[in-house]
Structures are given as structure tokens and as C-alpha cells.
Image (cartoon, one colour):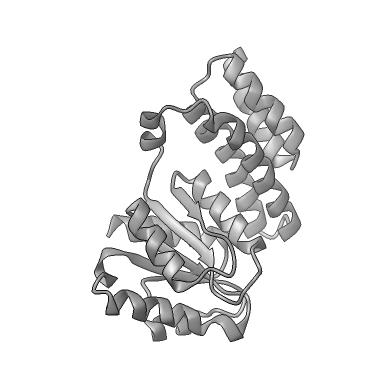
Length: 217
């Protein structure tokens, strides 16, 4: 195994062992070894998080594992991002997504996991956090020229804000400029269809699959 292969394996292993400190150390080692940050993310960190995601989907791991794996990836990416050229950032971009939890909902755990999984699969993700107003989604989508707007809700009382988002896009005459996808604990595929969005993901793995399909269309 070459030094580069060893470092890439260490990046993957750190995520799979949910070790943020080890992920940061491996990221620093990759910078010192002059490994492309894109390669470090795609062939190291993202590879590790996809393994965690697959095990979670298969019932071999639980939600806390997915959270810790995502946190390890995020910690290492922060180290690597400072060494990425603009063209590198462009080359990793499968599509641009604005993601947030709708107004009145302060839950962001699932949101962070989905955002990390999307990043691990090559999307550029702008996370506007929780309790995000409809206008925040739209303004950010315009600013970053988003392909997809992804809205999350963890409470039935805040789900109507998803409908408000679709209606606001229609009223502004820009609904056809963005694919809209929704998800979250109480959200169902039936609800997604009823409010006229383009996609629904019941969990992080499905959200990634749906996002990939939407950017192909």
C-alpha cells in the first residue's frame, strides 16, 4: 500500500469508526502529502460515509452511528476546504442543493445527516439550518443558482410551510426553475404528492437517490 492509499484508507476508516479527531489528523496528513482535496473527500471520507450509510440502511447501524459518521466527515472537510481551488470545488459538483428545516421547526439532526450524505455523493450543499422561512429558501436558491430546494419537517404542525414554499415559488413565477424535495419524520409520499413537490425521501439514503434522479431530469 502506498502512502497515498494509506492516508485515503485512514480517512475512510476514521468516518467508519466515528472518530472526528482521527478524521482531522488524516485530513491534515493528506494536505501534507499533497493529495488532492477532491480525491481525499471522494476516495476517502465520502467512501467511508457511504459504507456507514449502507450499513444504516441494512439495519446494521443505528441513527447515532450515522450522526457521528457525518460529524467526522464534516470535521475533516473543514480542514480540506481551505486547500481547495475554485476549479476543484466545481469539479466535485453533481448539483447544487439548498436544504433547511421549515419555519417553526428547530430540529436539525436529520437535516445535518442528509446534508452530509448529499455532500458525500458529490452535491454542493447549502444548509440554511432550522426554523428557516420560505423566503430564506428562495433567496438562497436564487443566490447560489440551486438545482434543488430540499425542505425538512419533523413536526406535523410545521408541514404546511412546505406547501407555502411551493406556492411562493409558483406566485413568483419561478417554480419551474427548481426541483423541490421534502422529507422528515411525519412527512409521507402522499403528502409530497398532495403539495406538488418533485421528490420525497424517507431517510438520508433515499434522499440521495431522489436527488440524483432529479438532477438527471
